[in-house]
Image (cartoon, rainbow, N blue to C red):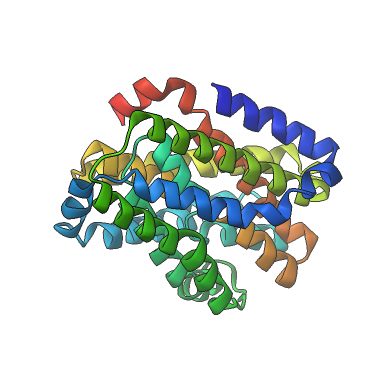
Length: 297
């Protein structure tokens, strides 16, 4: 409940006092990388061995993500007439999993290695996915700068997690106090991310229509629901099914905002700006119900 309220209150503060919040922006990426280092140290060695025996699961998850979300986004976009807005909605569905999904996986006791692997693969595949789905579903095309995406995913997520896992192998076990510290850092990182996102996209968020807000919420919840169905059909363990739900529903719409602004203008960037904050809020809403969430999903 604490993190959900922190994100909610922080979002309101960022909306009305963006300049105060944007002072924190330079600290966002380094603090996230440090958080992912601690996240890697939370991964037990037996989880690594189990993952290595099931190398196809990230690929299945990637296939599910990049089928569910683009098609769901396309279905939602059909309720709007503006072609730019429709393209902006579909673009959200073509985004890779948000890096914040790795942190939420920790907080909701999912499979961290699966989460990081899916996020990395989805980021690498994103330009191809955009090149395939966007012309097919909207008749438009968007160019993507591949190398910056790969570099950000590498230094902020992959490298810190790998170092953390290596340290954990050496330590064998970690104390409960360390786990609490790592979880607290994860919570702070998530809150910082959402504060900066809301502050940076204030103008676009204030111009959001009620219809678009409802449509994007429906898209987000549908993504979670279909991911649960797919994970069940795959007969994945609950921790990995939970991870799939998070990865599919939490799109890197921050990247979508950048691409939409460059190619579609302000109107096309509104769906991404809203979805970035929305997916963090909806996942964090599960935290107050964590025991039931973990048990059922």
